Image 1 (tube, one colour):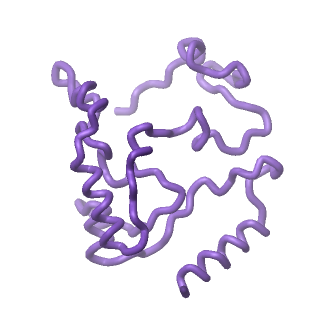
Image 2 (image 1 turned 90 degrees about the horizontal axis):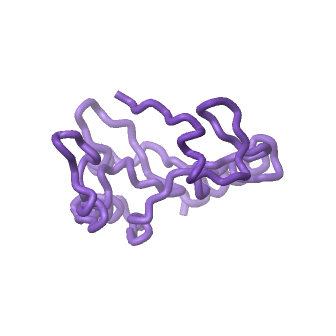
Length: 161
């Protein structure tokens, strides 16, 4: 069950005053196109120490598997559960493969019960997920057709190389 969002009033001590209140549960910044990769979005101090190699699929998967089996001291200090209530899946650098948030990731649709790394190693890369491209602050949607066409051409070049 997903936790209920906290009302904005409960978040005031940790929220920048540059944000405006939209309703009881939503803060926003006028003309902002992407907060998820900024200081209010997802970030993991633990992942700063993570090196992931993209040179070969096996290397990429090995790096993720190693991170999922490497204890992280701050997560260990927090513990996995308190009184039977889980705080986190485990105390490792990565909890699971999909927690690795980079700007680009090789992906594959997984079968029921299959782990993402297993799907990649068994069946190969099906597509590339390119993230956080809608960051151009001068455009209403954060990206335009010229940028999309360039990206398409660049990724095709990478594939052919």
